[in-house]
Length: 421
Length: 89
Image (cartoon, rainbow over all chains, first blue to last red):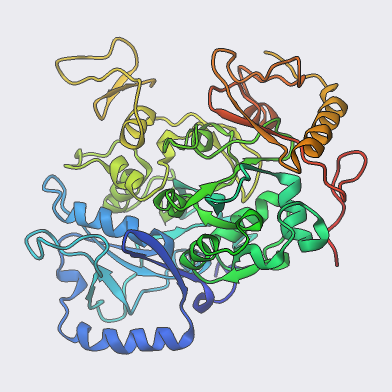
């Protein structure tokens, strides 16, 4: 049997993020919490529909960070009349999810789905998902999601029967209170501030009580740790379980000039009126850059073209044939939508918009890639770019619009814009 | 392709030090690059950018019209050759 050598803590210690009032909140699912959740879910599941009775169910085992995306996408797919699907999912740790699809471990509990418009017209993606009852013996997931590279979980190669597909990109930032005069941080400053604490003498970030970081299982810390070569368990600072605690500490800092915290870019984007982002200058870089092309834009252009280096891809896994093609047409459809690739039949919504609205950068809008956590960037040319559509959604696009009556002079018409290819 | 020279380091360090002393540690300046496509004024800092980036160092230093911030802090623990010491035990 294929055995994964886990490098991350047990699943119960994995991060758990939920959408709350438009902001990402993170809590650790401690054993007690899980037990209470199970108790709470049990009565509801007694009256819940069977998952198999839902229309075209696709089973996913995902990291908690991707739950907002899957809920939003699930809502759209429930009412996607050209190809209605029901995303039925369970959240768990990334390495656990990889192990599940590699070893065909059935999901037996805690499956959730989102209602269609007909079932609940007022439901929003910030509302709780609904439980459904798994079939006897459980169900093997069609799709597993990891928010770290597979190589961060195991040194073993994936079996040929499992394909790995990179999904949207998640960027991470250093944020400071608005009253701070700081505008940038270099690789060396981050190394000394977080790797040495006060002894690092990286002014003004020498007060360890004003360095707001995350616990060692959180992707925000893991991504930054890989970027500045300071292992996650060796960072100086106050460790918080949730992004909201980092935000609160920054806002309420008694010494804002000395305060700095790590956040997901999507969290910062929602608190721009209260926080500032620091531009980051990586090792070997001549200048520091924001994730976006300016302090006020939302285009993530520097993430997409390689000027901003602190990001991780989300990864989606599914069973594949000998040629690497997904065995499940439904799984392939869902993964293609998440990746921003053309899918047939054409969905009745914009999957790129769904991804962009969750603060993620679609893979198809990227111009660089990397192959391991914090690894070097190389040029990337997606087969079906969505740069124009993405920029139009989050900022402004200079691309020519197009449709059936207005074809592109050059390039390919996709999602209403003339993309390069 | 424009290639950066290696002569900026001592000049930049001296400028950064002078700026840090003059400004009380605020050692970053914004260059909202415009028509010069991200190339900072060669009179102050001899750095350049790459127009057709292929390698990692070229990608992170590619020409861009995005806002650039020049920051060259003086860090007491940084080694003379610019490298970083090991983390404390």
